[in-house]
Image (cartoon, rainbow over all chains, first blue to last red):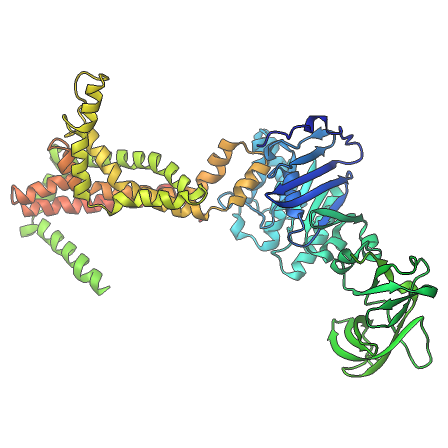
Amino acid sequence: MNAPPPGNSIHTTPTGGEGDLTLVGIVRRFGLVTALAGIDLAVRKGEMLTILGPSGSGKTTLLKVVAGFETPDEGDVLLGTRAITFATPAKRDIGMVFQNYALFPHMTVAQNIAFPLEMRKVAKAEAAKRVDDVLNLVDLGGLGDRLPRQLSGGQQQRAALARAIVFGPRLLLLDEPFGALDRKLREQMQLEVRRLQQHLGLTALFVTHDQEEALILSDRIAVMDRGRIVQLGTPQEIYRHPVNRFVAGFIGESNLFQARVASGGYAVLDGGARFRLPASAPPEGTEVGLLLRPERPRRLANGAAAENSFAGSVVEVVYLGETVKYRIRLDPGFEIIVRWPFQSSGGSPGKNERVTVGWNGDDLHLVQWS
Amino acid sequence: MAFLLAFYLVPVGLLLLQSVEGGSLAAYDKALTDGLYVGVLLDTMLIAAYVSIVCLLLGYPVAYFLAAAPAPWPTVGIIFVLLPFWTSILVRTYGWMILLGRNGIINRLLLESGLISAPFPLLNNMTGVLIGMVHVLLPYMVFPIYAVMRRVDTGLVSAAEGLGAPGWQIFRRVYFPLTLPGVLAGVTLVYILSIGFFITPALLGGGKVIMIAVLIEMQVRQFLNWSFAAALSAVLLAATLLVYLVLRRLFRSDLQWS
């Protein structure tokens, strides 16, 4: 383990009062690459907080710092009020569910789950009882004698979860745990994990690159980009009010336009098209990003009006069941994606059909462009 | 299959026929009841056990080094393990004779430095045979273990650590059990090769350490007792198969996951 960098001892003593897990100014560099460029984060007690970011954003390094597999160059990690920055993983009191579950293949499910208890020298009878309880909790009752490879993917996932929570850890870490499951099972497991986490009041830090998963599971989401947390908020806040182009593009489907604010509450796009802006528009001349979620534009019937309306033709139609996704080339020379409910009696436009699309200024959301 | 039949099964069949020459089991009777020959068989199995244990104790850390060290050390290490492997066994055995003899390099160094006053008996005894055999057979232990270690998921080690296991518990409960298939393969290989070893015990044992292969050779070359030699060979073959089955049986429950 690295010795603490000089000056670390006079580092602002973190209070640790606000969260169960508190990260203070975490910096981690690999050679010239800065993987974590100053992370401050507090995970509240009983909360499921998701670290969301693309690969290379630093989320995995952050997880390793919390778990103890990496030591930060600067900053502190606190569990409650206890600094664990330099503690070994074994001494952290953190339960972790790994990406591929990391169940010990040579032990039965029950032995796997008993492992952390055994390492904590829990008496045999007590351990057996707790293993039984947790097996029932994750719906694996009666499967304790199986080997991991004799379980299905979903069952392995539950076993891994059981092993991570059986010793009553202070914090639960989930490292992309649903990646290996097929879609249907994944959705089911996500809800089960969420239910269990809420039922037990576990404080959990969940790392994923899957924005949909993050929106479903989280109390709050921290979006990471290039080693920084660029936005922290509830799923709704993140979806509705992304702070910049990166978050807007990463969360959900979106139409993003680069524009310059002009006079009279309008903005001008690169191609010359003009958009009516929301009421809270920035001063004239500002470069802004305009975010238009695909479900916001309406199809305008003859005579209907909207603050922004454009005619165009449908380029692509994708059926998604209840809704249909259209790519529409608008006449000023740009394309947008829209999602409308499917209408059976010929109400949904076909490919190459001419349509008029409209939306109001308030449907647009302003984001930082750079 | 045809190759196996022509060059293995047929000779073995002929050998077995020869061992019951004239329809009598006298040769077997002698091999299995005469204290002298039973003693040699037991000695052989004991020596093979020593060799296997020493090879395991030396080979396991070497295999771990090869599997875990950062580049370029694994490559360098593999070359060092393979180099003696590619050298003729005769050359290596004579090499050990030069090193271990009464006037050998080791004894002379120790004598001249004043550490000992009389030469250590390193050659023409059990010590010499063990050293020579371990040297020859070590790669057969290292490579199977190395192959298994390479496939051990390091995520499991991290998981054990994260679940609160200290270093030696990680080794005892997770890493070692996961490498057990390699250990078993290495031990089986070395043990079976040891039982039938000839050149090294013949040369380094100096006629004092008689292993069963040496005994068989004596029967053929000195006593021309082909029938008895064949019977001893059959016993050796049976012992080898038995050991293999016993080892497999012994570790079956530990390996059912693999």
